[in-house]
Image 1 (cartoon, rainbow, N blue to C red):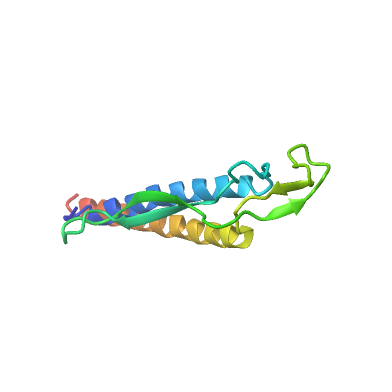
Image 2 (cartoon, rainbow, N blue to C red):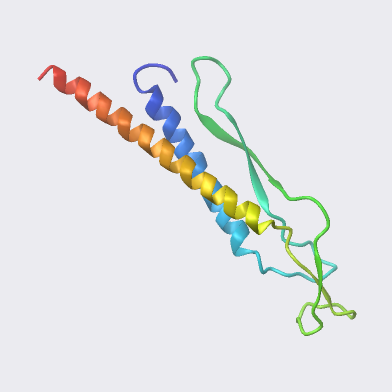
Length: 134
C-alpha cells in the first residue's frame, strides 16, 4: 500500500504479526513441562516464518507465511515415578529452548512497541495536518 496511510498500514501489519509471534512463544513456554511417553510424538516448539507482503514497491508490510516445528530428537529423562514412563522409567521432554524463547519474547515485545509507536506518530502527524486548515 502506498499513499498517505502507508506507514499506518505497515505498522499495523507488524503489530498483527507481533501479536501472533507473542502468542506462539507463550504457547511454547507454557509447554516447557510437557512430557510424553517414548512412543509418542514429543511437544515441538513452533516458529513463525514471516515474509514481506507482496513484493512490489507499492506493497509493504509483513505477513505470516508458515509455522514450522523444532526438529531433532527429544531429550529423554529418567523418571520411573512419572505416569507416562516406559518399562525402563524413561519419558521424553519437549523440544524447547527456554532461554531462546524468552529472548524471542523480549524481541517480540520490542517489535510490538516500535510498531505501536509508529502508528501513534503517524496518527498524530495526520491529525496535525488536518488541523492546519482549521
